Image (tube, rainbow, N blue to C red; front, side, top):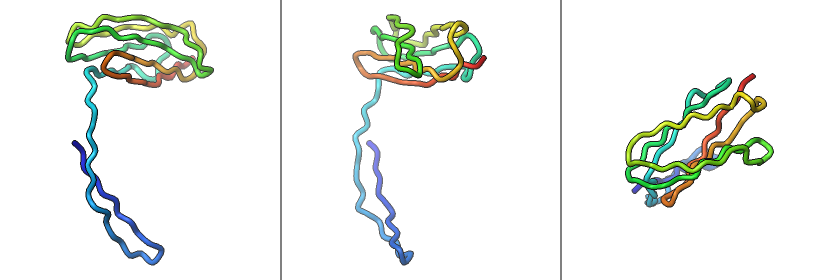
Length: 112
């Protein structure tokens, strides 16, 4: 659980705080990261999962076109999937990892 409050400052510089609020945070059953970023060719997608399961991995270009879609089985540990972006034009690409327990979206920059 996270807690927060706001500090409000009026035009005369007087400050006051709001009451403390709580926020329930949903914890995903997996974590994903990409490296190297930016990249010229290959990008590694590392997925760390708590449980076994299946995720869908999509790579989407700046125009919203899906240029790659794969299904990956998770084994309840750390796994690395390598994608070759060498044939694609330079620019940003979204890598979306979706599973039963959530979705993670990352941006990778492809360089020439």
